[in-house]
Image 1: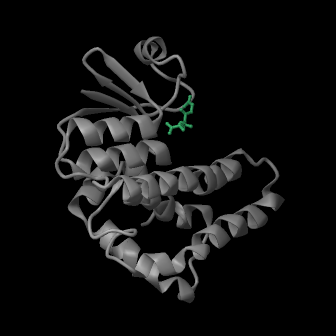
Image 2: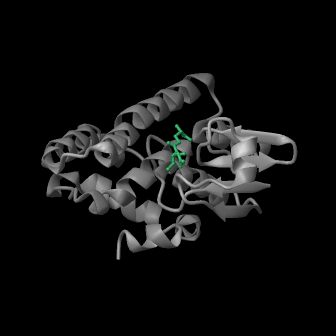
Length: 199
Ligand SMILES: N[C@@H](CCC(=O)N[C@@H](CS)C(=O)NCC(=O)O)C(=O)O
């Protein structure tokens, strides 16, 4: 199996994190966004990263990839078993992708730097809205690490890079971050660029 991944991209980051949590043996090919290799351009009509190649199967869009990985490599499971909790986790994934990842993309796209403080505040406010949810269980609404944690963590990890500082009342999130970041799988999934985001 091969994963084409961008070293600084949060969508690629969550995919690498799922691979590491499951201990999947895979070749990770680091690709520079905007200059994708010819073989990848042929394989993925969306020309996007991450892209997973598993023999004849080519998958893109990180959600499609991580859900495939969770089914193809069921241990440890990264989604709850019962349909109601699964649906709630899927809804959480949808909202984090739309709101949190959407906010990062908006900041990346913004050409007028004067807009950045407003955009930073929008993301910070969204993160703080859920602060009490982070203190209910060791992981996000779960006793076990899940796809939701793999999706939240790449955004939280990038906050200093976007000059967003969590205030003292975000203590439950800071503690949650320490739990996630100390996991060996989290450390091993980081690219060099990502490691330098928090030095
Ligand atoms: N929703 C997609 C978003 C992927 C995405 O935006 N990837 C960026 C990573 S930099 C990309 O492929 N950009 C185009 C390029 O690198 O040429 C996913 O989850 O995979």
